[in-house]
View 1 (cartoon, helix red, strand yellow):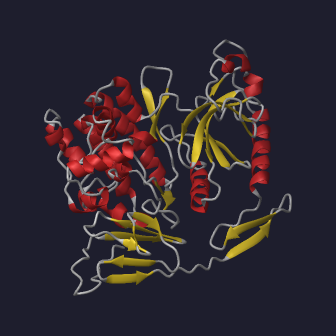
View 2 (cartoon, helix red, strand yellow; view 1 turned 180 degrees about the vertical axis):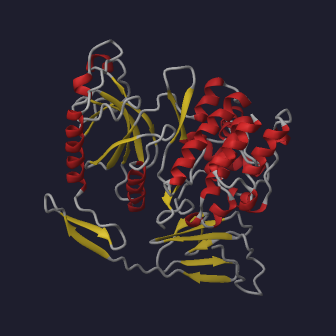
View 3 (cartoon, helix red, strand yellow; view 1 turned 90 degrees about the horizontal axis):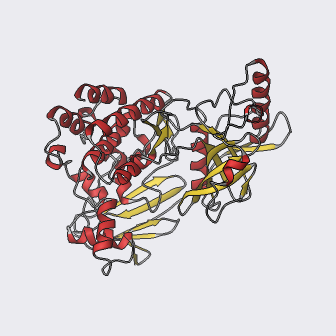
Length: 468
């Protein structure tokens, strides 16, 4: 819950939006909200910092001492198959088997099922029959229409980049699709089954919160089977770090689509993508899961053999179940400011307690962005930053410096302050030619007050369908 209190009646140098302190055990993070006189941690001015036991926070004339204690109860049980010890948190569900044995049992079940069913006929694009190879683990029928297949000769022509040939268990890296400070995403080839897929691996093993979040992503994705959610296929752990394998969305994401066209999407293009995405969101909501990080980059596009691309919800790293308290977005240091602009006020205040309307709001902002190329607030977009770097390259060395300069020139507040204190700009002010009925639907989806928004992804999708 948001907490507002006055530190001292005689301290004029502290405001109610001076800084944000979020506690997500065992971590606590402080973020200065562009205060006039700054926030000091241990005598040093900080904009964003993870707190530790004994730290001193100074704001105005007031000092706060940080006290952090941790007492986590754990249990140790034995795997029923191999006898290996498994350590879990006291409040976690008790597993019967270790992760290795669970995987072996699942593979054996699939093989037995495949013996009873007709094996689908699968070929490479060159015509080579891959049916037996594709079904060697009994999953060809299950993954029909989800993954694509290739013979070893044809896959050679797709290899590119420095990581080519790298092995991650049975997966061979074909090319790197993306990377960040915490890990990489590869296109991989699974020779035993001839499948071409995407593999996401965490490489920062020292960041325990990241590993915990990644494990949660694997667990949640394993529950999802829907045409508009990216399909989980496999997971594992190597010395480098844990990984998960999913279907390869070979047509990028919704943000890439606007870059490819070099123009904004039309109403007839953008709205159907959002309607289909909302079907996937409604499905994950029915599973008791809130995504919490919906934006154009996290809606991937898959070909369906026809002319139209199929949107699929991806990146469940910040998703949570209603029944689970774990994880927070604000406490993840270095979260991009653009990402924050897709969050409603309640997520800024208390990201752990958000429900379905949070995802509805994020999809409303996504549609707003696709149609206008702008956020519902005056704040630089990635394209504004790129344009500034090209036109004013002598003033900024990188995107971070360009963003800070643009914010200073425009006298803009931090995204958190903007979302908490400003009203969204009606979409017709950005795009006057948008039909009134559609504008009303988009504006309702991004209302700051939860009761004023659509109650569900289905309701939002139906309103868009009627407006279209």
